[in-house]
Every structure is written in structure tokens, then in C-alpha cells.
Length: 451
Image (cartoon, rainbow, N blue to C red; front, side, top):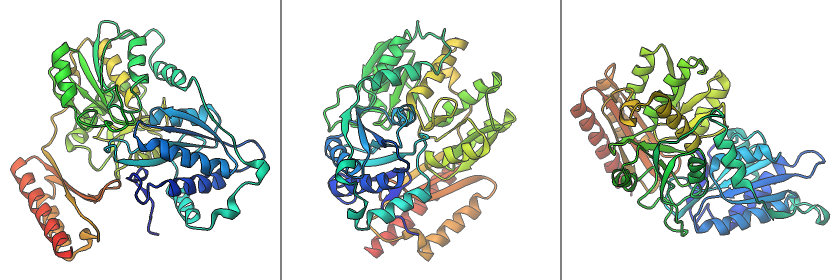
């Protein structure tokens, strides 16, 4: 069945345009409230958000929907996505909501949903929600005496700060490390610097002055230039870049070089293997992770299980096959010993602890393998299904035949933007560049012809 609202990470779109309108947000609240309103207890939902201007609008609309469905709404304010997942369980809520478009610009927003166990909802539950959204919801409203209450909850930042600190051993300290952190003017702008400082680090913070419109703007994990400059300026030992909702992280080493999620997963996997903590015989990553990571893990006697793109699918595979480490090249890193979703800050703490333990500079510690040349380009499209065109399919088949045994090709529509992503990797950089450019040209021509 075609999904009209949900993508790879909840519902996402341009603010005040379909589907990210107050009306849709309220309908989601009513529909989700109906599905999770089971039993005779007082039902509750926790609602967090990042720092986007549209968050106020969508938050109020969702509170209206949930309370109309008979759930008490606990409003958390700006707080990281992993904190919402944690607090959903901690506060014994029936459902959790994060209003965020993650790494997208402020003009976009989204709705991420968590079940009472703190995990993102399954495809099946999302389809149930979609079915309900399009029905007449009047019959799903609570009786007058059963309408929910709404209140803002104090102290949630402190809960998450303590949770993050407890992911390290009790005697762990970051004293002696100068850490530069870029909070992307997003959800972690208060809690992330606090965690690092309380653990003893000398903290230099940027991207911590949100104004509703500067989230992810020339900052954060998708735009690390400002952090690279700051690392050089203050001679930091390490730089940490979070994204707008703090569920992903990239690292900048002391030389100002960027370290992606693949390298970070390799560091944590090696560390946990040595400590006999790694479960599942390897890690879980997506089809986008570099072939170099796979080869590195193989050299350590470990496996790499690949899923389709989306940290939700990584988590599903981890749960089904008893892995405790997984993630994405983009920096979503899931450590299931500590949480149910990607957590950029907690992943960074694992790297920092390893830096302290080994005494190695980040530039050495976080270069576990030589990445295979990989190129990713995007083709924007306004409608239709260009990947179903026969000309495109033939071009893809030809490219796959050429790369057989020497590399990988991944072509997929983005789950969050109107883009076709074309990625190829292999040992021959010039071959990879030619293949990607040719495919991008073919898809663009088909798109233009269909316009």
C-alpha cells in the first residue's frame, strides 16, 4: 500500500504546507491517541521539539489532538530526539512525539513517533495511523469528562544529562580534554555542553544561540566548516557536531579533518570487542556505509549486516538479531545498551572515553580504515517515478554489470526530500565518478522530458 504521509523517519515536509500543517498535526494526535488509548489508566503522551519557528505551531496542534483523544500531554520543550525516546519510557507514557525535521533547514518540520517502549513505530502501525487520519475523526474524540490535560514538565533536561553521563563508567572523567561542540542551534543547545562540562571537559560551544530560523544553518553535522575553524582557533583536542535534533554526530579531529559515522562505528566496535561487550558478531549499518568499513570489520572477524536507509531499519535488525551497535554513515549511531534510537551525544561520549583511555590523538584513533572512493549525487525531481523509466533501469543495469565484483551501486529515492540519490563506490575513483555522472545525467534527462 502506498504511504501518503510517512517516510523513512516519520512525517516530514515544508512547514505550513501539506502535510506539515496544523490540521494534519492535530489529526495525527487524534489518530495516534486513538490507537494507544488502551486500558483504564490515565493515558499520557510526551511531546518534545527542536528549535524551529514552526515548532510552536505544530506543538500546540498536537497537544489539541492528543487531549481531544483523551491523553494527558506532557510538554517537554526543546530537547534531543533520544531524550524523548528515553522519557517516553521513564515517564511511562503511552506514546512519545518529537517535532523535528532533523538535519533539514528551518523551513521544514516533521513528526517522529515512539511507542511506550521508546522505539519508533513499525510500518504496520504507521499504516494504521494513515488510515485513521483520512477518516472522519469525530467518533474518535473523548467524552467531555475524559478530555486530556496538558502541562509543561520541568527537570527533563536534568534527567537526560544524568542519563547521558551514566553511559560512561562512574569514575570516568574528561578532564584534560578541550572539546569544541557545535549544537547546530538545535535541540541539544543546552544539554550537550552541560554533559561535557560536568564530566570535566574544557568546553567551547558554538551553534547554541537558536532564533527559530538558524537551526542547521551553516552549522551542525551537515555543515561542519564552522566547527573545523573553531577547532583550529581554540586548539581543541576534538570537535563534536550534532544535528538539529541531536540524534546524529560527526567528529572533527585535532587537525580539523571530518570523521564520519562509519569510522566512529569502527572505533566503538573495536573498543567493545576488546571489552567483550560487542553483541551479534559485528554491527548493523545501511547500504550507504562504505565498503572500507565492511573490509575492516572482516579483518577483525566481524560481520556487517546491511539494511535499507533509515536508523529505524537499523534498529529493527539490531533487535531481531541481538546486535548492540549499529548506525549510518551520516552519524546516526545506535547503542542499544543505552538507548532505543540514534544518540549523537552518547555516541560522542564513547569516542571521548576511548580517547582518554588510549591517550591517542583523535586523528589516529578515528582512522580505523581507508575508505573506498565513494561518490554520492542527488537529482531533484518534482513528480513522477523516474526510477521506473526503462531508460533509467537499463542504465542502472549496465552500471551494475560494470561494477560487478569491484564495487557497489546504490540508487534510491530520498525518504525525506524530493531527491533521487545516486551513490557508487569502488577502488577505481575515475570509474566511480564516470558512472555516477552518467547516471545522474540519464535520470535528469528523463525527469526533464516528463516535466
